[in-house]
Image 1 (cartoon, rainbow, N blue to C red):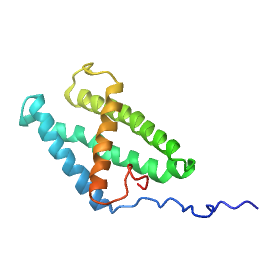
Image 2: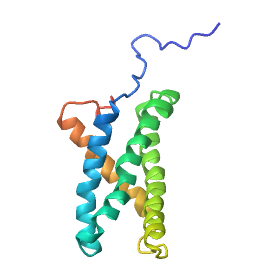
Image 3: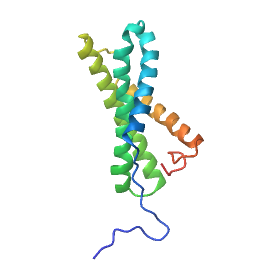
Image 4: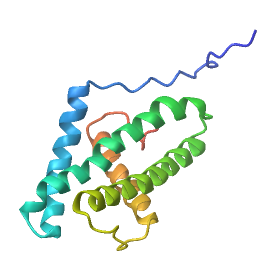
Length: 152
């Protein structure tokens, strides 16, 4: 019989858990602030509600992408730091592309306008990596497990 327990000095990855209220408070709050910023670019406060809904894709969708990585993918990968970093950044990039496309589709469906071709698809992936690196830096500054220390 084969044991799946980790070897000496190796601990299991702890699943990430957070109360739903905390998740929704943070992600919706960020979406509202991000929506306010985006609405100024779109032409004024009249766009704020739609812009806030659009910003839920990277905030709430990004949270669930991160949960998928932490609780499903990471435990199935080798613990090698290089593998973990590559997988996480790749997850952020691919997830960012999907979230970017979802944002564009949301705007197109709600406004009746055709999909914008202002930025290439891969820009969403690069932007999401940047967003995640900043978010992980905030965790690090607060002394919480994060990407940079390999614990979060």
